[in-house]
Image 1 (cartoon, rainbow, N blue to C red):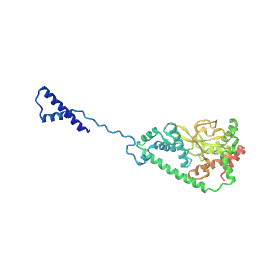
Image 2: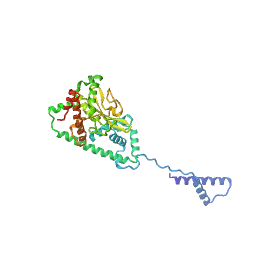
Image 3: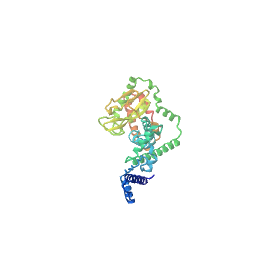
Image 4: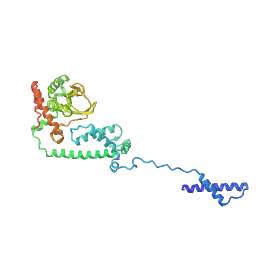
Length: 343
């Protein structure tokens, strides 16, 4: 029954009730006009139902098609974009950086209950809906989609280079094996004292090599090793094997990228003094949290525009370090460094 009809019925009943009372009391009957007037008055006096507006969810809000198509994954995309720009290894190609950022974000969102596997939970869907209403949501989502296209192109180029690369000779395969740390298989058995003696000699030889034309980044007079972590870690790997680690270090100027080494069971940093820490740090376990291992083979053996300049600087650094090692009568270590020439 609609509201106007219901109110009319109530008014009619009220008028009939009044008529019945008048008859019992002996009062004269009301005229038709009086009955209609009483019904209208009762209708006006009846309380009216107030209509409340219907609540709308985040999905009911008008969204750009790009946001609407990705509504459940806005939170993940936002995280990947931020990590890619601020935390990934800038020396890697775009597709490798995107893979790094994606792995970091998926793990983080899973820990906080926003993802199960790679599917958003209820909390994840709600959070994505909230982020989709931000003023800059569309701009960020466009940047993420552009990043995906860039990474796809980068991956295609890397795949094509691998297909067209000439088959490696036995000597090249052996060199590749050495770069993976096989040159120092026994490093896990080294004591900290013995390893530090080796590292100290290497660091002493690096001192006169540190200069503004061998730096990758800003040159700082107060800390000559600043900007040399990339060059120094590659040189240490060439001489002692192992792996190169990548991470971020918090400074007064913000987080900056940093490289150090993993040699057997030991983590080794030979440029710690740029952060007002000991110049040589050797720890069984972690010196600091690493975000990834630096994939030197992909970086160095598949030349691309982004790695030409740092590798040119490293070649200059390596040659000067070789001379200093000769002066210090460290021919055994120097031979490892020289044998790492790219054939």
